[in-house]
Image (cartoon, rainbow, N blue to C red; front, side):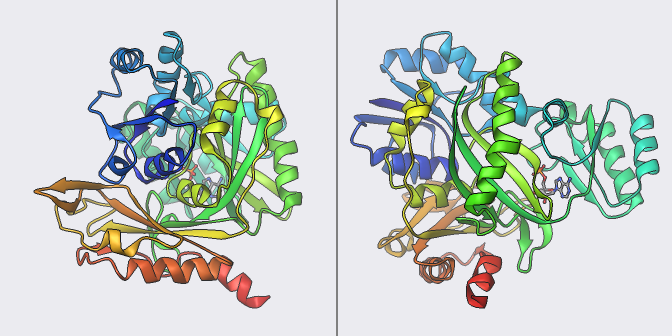
Length: 425
Ligand code: AMP
């Protein structure tokens, strides 16, 4: 098979690494990719926003499957535009990607299909949103409706914070994404990420993970794209997975089909596990990063076989096997992240640090005069497997400490909840 992978982060490096291991693969291209992906694929310069150009490339290079990593192109309808040219795509249509592209759309779907989630209101103007927030009180959660690069959510612990977040949305801080706002009940419990591969009809459970969104040890500091993750998530027991499928994922699949927007691709449910069971915080319509890195390390089966089955509507006849090991990723970020990261510092020792169940996925790197340099906020994902989360954690940090990059930093406590659970056993 000839495959084109779209994207340039740690998620896409992990996908490229796993796709490259498939005996089905004859050629892998990546656009735009990064130096790590460049070890697995031929990098091509393509304007991903120009769907006609992507389609031309696919026709010219006889691409059998396009795998779309990030949400932006999906919400912009790249899957529709490629399918219109008879190009096979793994990823949802524009209408199905509304599950990520519009929080209000997803909340209404939950309301219509009795999917457990936080109580909410949708607002298109400041005055009515303020009135709702003042009546409900804090803590309360304010969300820009559209894609806001992970910055559109404020968990407000007091009224002043909530009102400031509303002002920011309606001031245009998030552009068109904030023109509508969802105001939500504050949920408590333990968060978990749950993934399914979907083919429009069938959703196949595809692993669990927990990530660390906060910048600093102890889960404090500003939110980031994710400073680390591990899989599996201990809170996602087989019973909890069954309930999540029955109460959340299956009604979503039914609802999307009934709306004429059957969902295919990766459905990534952000969950709050409370005493009452699983509640949906949000959907993403692609893999998480760094969650994808830990999932790919644990996946025993051929990823390309599974992506084909999803693209062809064959998931009902497919199963997935996982290694009986945990995996854990520690993100190394460039100083300044999540604000303005310093670019251009030289990173040494990456190749030597990997091996023996440790993979170092590139997220924000570049080659400058033959040297590997930082070229983004989150730069590397140091990912290790182990018999327990604790062992994966020890191996990941041992590898990370072999990397010579004084301008990089990381959290030192990735996986702490799971490790303390293991120690209490
Ligand atoms: P999201 O971008 O929707 O994933 O939200 C980012 C983070 O905000 C989540 O991972 C949660 O930690 C938190 N969050 C979002 N919605 C709620 C909610 N209704 N109650 C409590 N925390 C929330």
